[in-house]
Length: 165
Image (cartoon, rainbow, N blue to C red; front, side):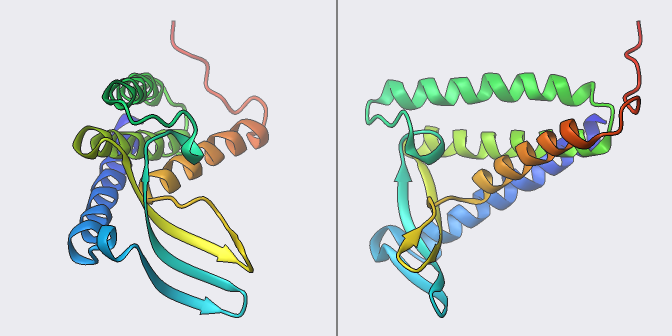
């Protein structure tokens, strides 16, 4: 099951880095700061520039260089452990979910090494409430974790193959 997971991880990584390149170099979002894209009644979608120096939802943010290196190193360690899990995955869903998480984690590590922060730009909102601004990597991580949770909760009992000795 390693091949499908790694393939999806590579696709996520390429899409993540491509969209970030477009945001930074074509849309010039760091200078423009916000581009309204869609507004339907109280609902909207904007491209909004955020440099996330923390982890999920900006937690553990820090401007010191060592913080970004430590967060990047931790993400790479976790990605390595997830690849090991992926190599032993017993279903395609689990392998693909892990691939999404790994691809997203590596995409955000690349940002930390290049910029000292993660490039976030997807801004969905309703009325005056804005969800956290995120990127393709973040979406892949969340969807991957959600798929793993659903698999763990709803997989029929006895459908897991026993591990070889």
